[in-house]
Length: 263
Ligand SMILES: C[S@@+](CC[C@H](N)C(=O)[O-])C[C@H]1O[C@@H](n2cnc3c(N)ncnc32)[C@H](O)[C@@H]1O
Image 1 (cartoon, rainbow, N blue to C red):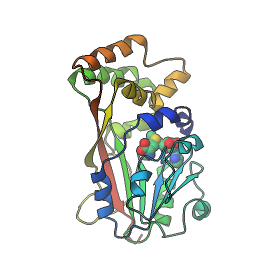
Image 2: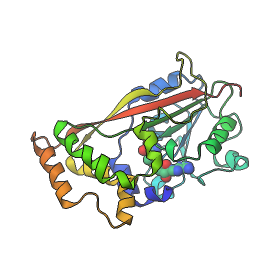
Image 3: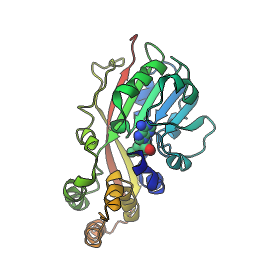
Image 4: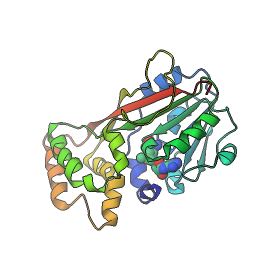
């Protein structure tokens, strides 16, 4: 699977949304110390760059070196390539020592992980009892009625056969994902909590986003171009209807958040 994100790393860096300030403020407000954050599946550093403004140090890991190459260079962020499942006795070398991390974040990536193996690592590396894990996904983009009415069948019918089954967890807004952690202070459950990311996009940028999908890459490998001429034409017509080239595209975000407890 990780291979899917290697081939379109450039589209990924250009086409994906960043995350809103409120999301990071909410997460940080549940996290007493701000020494070290580990952003897992960092891609091209979409979350790592915001974390770097709040946490003293950030370790941002990904299985794909190609994705990491497109991440911004920031003084307090260390990028690190890892295997898909890091052996627990190598976690200190790749990431940090036992019980040393304040926050683990996973942005739009948790559904790809081997969850039981990953959670073992998270529990080992987080500070006890208040170390926090925050994982979020975003679902489909919202533009306006015209564009969204072209998007809906494109997503639900055209692209559907090319998504990995784990994508269902995203469609279900992480409501069903296994998440064995305790509610953080001030909440009585671990989410999902809803936020919204907004990105101003031209039509070309919107297409870049659609091309950054793993489903787009999978289809391409099977000889199918999901953005066929007739589909492109439909999007163009819908996009140009209001005469505005650049539009605000909204991506609803669903956050799961919990603390590790004493185990
Ligand atoms: C959809 S992208 C999300 C990237 C970024 N976090 C963001 O918010 O846009 C998923 C990322 O997870 C990485 N990935 C997939 N499986 C992984 C694993 N087992 N461990 C670490 N990273 C993984 C992929 O290489 C890819 O960069």
